[in-house]
Length: 160
Image 1 (cartoon, rainbow, N blue to C red):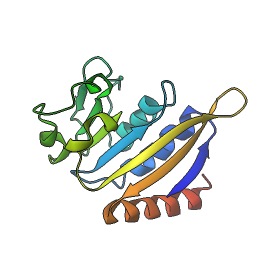
Image 2 (cartoon, rainbow, N blue to C red):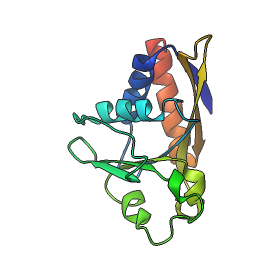
Image 3 (cartoon, rainbow, N blue to C red):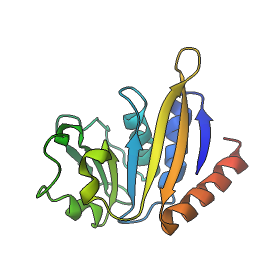
């Protein structure tokens, strides 16, 4: 686990872009944070780092947005609306075990569907005017522990 502070949206996106360069097919990222915490901004950075040159929108009302024109497909999910019903029989396994990267907001509502290993990224607004983002990386599983360690080395070298 490690935490760092992004001073603005551009820094948040750059951190996410650096992470994206390390991602592989079947990687699962859980984004945690309140409304306005920067989850979609972080996903925009991931898309940028994956070479996806499409407008990234929040999937709040569509559940899943697929972006396939990059180094890896990006599946951006917002499962908040599944709070009362869960994700049974919605085909999440096709995304989670497919050939792309799955980014899931509000994953606690589909815990039963999640793989054993994943990376949780917690975003918390900080600063006098909430212009900063405290970003915490919480790996679950050996793959993600190594990924976070590598990312930390890259970001520290760059002075993030």
